[in-house]
Amino acid sequence: MNALAKRIHDISVLDKARRVFGAKTHDYLGQKVASGDLEALEARNQCRLPVDYRRFLEEIGTGVGPYYGLLSLSKVEEELRMIEEDYQEANAERATPGDSFGLERQVLALKTLRTLDFPNLDCPDTRGGFIPICHHGCEFMTVLVVSGECAGMVMDTTNFDSRPSHWFPAKCPPGIVEYAQQRKPISSFPNWPTFPDWIDGWIRQGVQDLS
Image 1 (cartoon, rainbow, N blue to C red):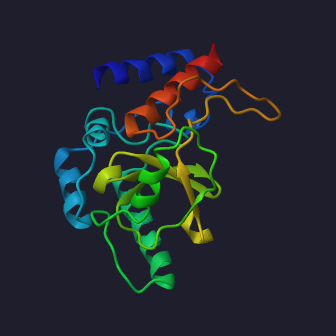
Image 2: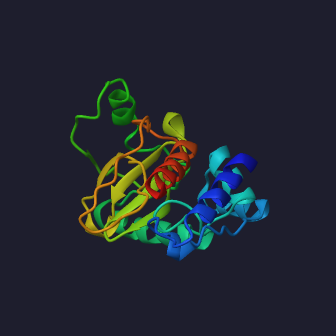
């Protein structure tokens, strides 16, 4: 995690004008989270956070990160409440992030494919198995799967207040975003990224665009 913190510092120095998408919002500064606060969130939501995500929050913090930065714990729980309300409009069944992830079977089947040439997945039936971690702006957000065989996987989804939402493996977060400009994507971003893959992709794309 020290190496990752150094890379974030290095891109902060490189990006003096804060040209990378979201950098003017988070300024590459993280707010470290106490382990006790993470444990309290886990207890309230009956889940266990993936180790890499937990360490990032403890050692680097919320705020900094892809898009507009990682959500604070209070914002994660606020989003969870809104997601729960949205699900309850369509389903009587309640669920917590620690319950089964509703798309696990489909995701595990799709992971056997060599390409990602498939339709977006429909919204799972319950809010179980994931937490929101980042807003893209407009109708998109990134979520982290926290239960089952897919735990640690990062997925993108359309926002829940526009149900039915659609889900897909997280794309590499953008670096510099400028009108009518297309940047060359980095190579070797995983088809099914974990949290460290996603953070690493954000840094690599930003550095490539800046240089």
